[in-house]
Amino acid sequence: MKTLQFNIILIILLASTSCEKVTEAVLPASNEDIIVVEGWLNADKDFQGLRFTHPVSLNQNYNLASATITDVKAYVRINGEHLLPLHLFPDGYYRPLYGLKIKADSIYELLGTWKGSQFYAKTLIPDKPQISNIDYIVNSNDSTSHIEVNISADTNKVYGAKWVILNKDTSSQFNNIVEYQIGSQFNIVTATTTDLPLKYRSSDYNLLTYVIVSEIDPQFINYFNSKENNQISNNPFTQANGSVSWNVKGEKAIGLFIGVNESAPIKVVRP
Amino acid sequence: MKKTCAKYQKIVFRYLVLFAVAATIQSCLKNDTVTPVSIGVNNSAELLSYLESKGDYINSSLCPSLITPTDLYSMQNDVILLDIRDSSKFSDGHIKGAVNLRQFDIIPFLKKNKIKIDTNIVIVSTNGQSASFCTAGLRLLGYQKVYALKYGMASWNSYFSDEWLKAIKTRIEYYADFWAPPKPPFKSLPSVVYSNSNLSLENKLLDRVTNILSENFTDDVAINYNTTYYYLSDGNVITSWNSYFKICYGNDSLYFNQSVIGYKTPGHITGVYYYQSGPVYELRSDQKLQSLPINNSILIYSKDGHLSAELTMYLKILGYDIRSLLFGGSYLFYYVYGPQKAFSSGSINNFPYEK
Image (cartoon, rainbow over all chains, first blue to last red):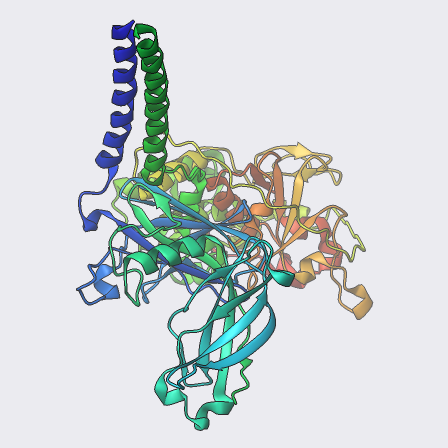
């Protein structure tokens, strides 16, 4: 009986370790074997295209031309049927030959092959965010200021906000990404921008301060939170695998392929 | 004491088994993130992508690639002239310098003679449409200066124009249909089969074109005309085209009846789908290509059969079951379409030919 028990445990443990071995075996040997996908699909806008690059270490300068992978075969599929081949353009982006307008409420898939291995991602393009209130917040000792936006949240979307100085500057990143919270009053969630740079806090910019609110595919929050916890970098694509949660799946692929719907710039009332 | 010990042993064993199972599942789930994914793209998608990357000839202003008899006559010594009619027709009369070969011999001929891709090549058939079919094949393979003789031998000399003249006089159809049915929902692209799936994309395309050129595409209708017949490029003569997915490929003046605003345009038979040619190019990948059926035969017509013949080659490469309606709108609607829009006695030249 004891021998039988021992054998059963041994088999199960062996099975367990064999799975671990597969994981190690299929991981790319070096950065050169990994493809990094970067793609934002902005609703109601012309599709800028996808970047397929080698990862670049954080201490290296990011050079798109040298990092671009030129031999990717990829397609975008819309709503399960409409297949559009992607082609590499001189600006380093892959996009359909005749361009593409991204439509809200549609599902976009990325289907690709590179070096004989396939990668895949899927995203839903959200609707326009429903904004209920905007506040300009100055902290108690008047050292920083930011914008807070209240949004009527959908259960399966996430939200972020960026400050805009009209015709001059826009925040490069979200301060936080928020999602629907069970029990929240009227499904309201609050997104905040990063702090406004000091130079824009003067009254000269009072009439030029705007905010853009983004409704984003919920897969983005996993990426955002894991990135925040693991790396500090303005460019999320200048890094290797790490522990960041990507939505592009594949043996040799990492990256983001994410649908977003941005509001028009909304004027912020500053005191 | 022993009993208690055995009892604890059993409990510990159960927990160990549970732990091991959980560890197995967890380790395998982790593996999901690096498991190769299957993207399930049909074979024809890679051909579509390849053809687009080479300039998407078929959806460009270069198509249809035609040469007039006058232009051919002026540059006769500077072209490779391929006459693809059968040998009896060739013997009965041909343009000086023409090489007689069948459709499926064109590519071996070009390869054997190491013809460069920028060489002027003119393909000649009886009524022009088979030549356009072959021209599309060569253009898609990268031959940059391939042309079909417009209206074929029929326009070279009146001796050969019998079939075209009959085609435009024997049938009058006039359909005052102002409405275009909405195109069907999108389907996946068709699958294609290669003789060798390990070929490069360039050679896969060569394989497809070679195989398609060995199929029968004919613009010969050397039988007695009957106004109740439709003449198809696969050699079939039918009395009803209801079983086909019918496409008019052209512009508004070929599809819509505009008599109310003073134009003599033909309209279309109810049930015919309208796919606009240039500058809209509704058979492009970003337009309505995938609304074409993959489980139904397609019948396409254009103004005079040249453009539809080129489209037939292209769509066959992508795996569609398609044939062209010979003489196109010129055959269906000549009476209202008017001689200024299609082949007429004015299209016929009297250039010399050899026997």
